[in-house]
Amino acid sequence: MTCAVAAHLPDGRLHLQQGPIDLVIEAFGTAREVEHAYAQAMEGFGDILPGLVGELPALRQPVGETYPSLRGPVARRMAEAVWPHRAVYITPMAAVAGAVADEVLAALVRGRALDKAYVNDGGDIAVHLAPGHQLRAGIVADLQAPQLSGFATLHHDRPVRGIATSGCGGRSFSLGIADSTTVLAATAAAADAAATLIANAVNVDTPAVRRQPACELDPDSDLGELAVTVAVGDLPPALVVEALDRGLLEARRLRLCGMIDSAALSLQGHWRIESGGTAFARREAE
Image 1 (cartoon, rainbow, N blue to C red):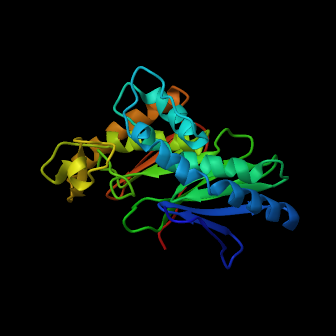
Image 2: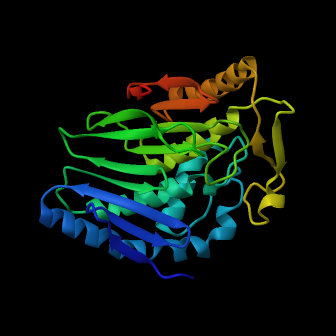
């Protein structure tokens, strides 16, 4: 297993990396508080990947009627995030990036007086906000051609402390065809799991979509023989609308059940937004 690497970026942010885990961290406050916060994040980071690897077989199993028996703090966060969705096929791996971000954020802010902070794990972001502070996060619609498409502004007095994005162009396999689904929720792990399900729901059956069993693409995939999206061709507007509307229904269900705050869905230049209070703002084309 590779060793954990820590480095300060030129702009002062902290970069932590080990194996597939790649974090960018920024804290705001006095220089002393930020320095101690970064030290705490570095101290707690080294145990995360070994802990996950030790429980990987269980983390790749779909959640069923029995609550997953897991030991590590990140693994337990993953189980907590996916448990409400156990009626469908989902494994704790659906929340791994968000859970890692949540755990490192907890180490970062423990006992510290910070105005705000975030831990960004490849686009799944855990956020800390002190009273009177806010954070504006950029939204990327096309994961394969990343550029800012909009923004979400998080406020201390709103319950959102996690952001996650999923889609067929992301780091993980998707059952759906969304370019992206960005979800705001109480934690990054909760947002991560919900973004996975909403992205899966953005879907239509058409020859323009090419799919393949996940196990053929990656024998270790937690999705097994489920058909995941490999490529999406140009779709007629009617099918784009149908796919987005299906995703919007899932986002609305999750919001009404109290599992998410808001979601923004995109597919081939079209958008749907389900908002429970945190506003998404589209970025105007230049």
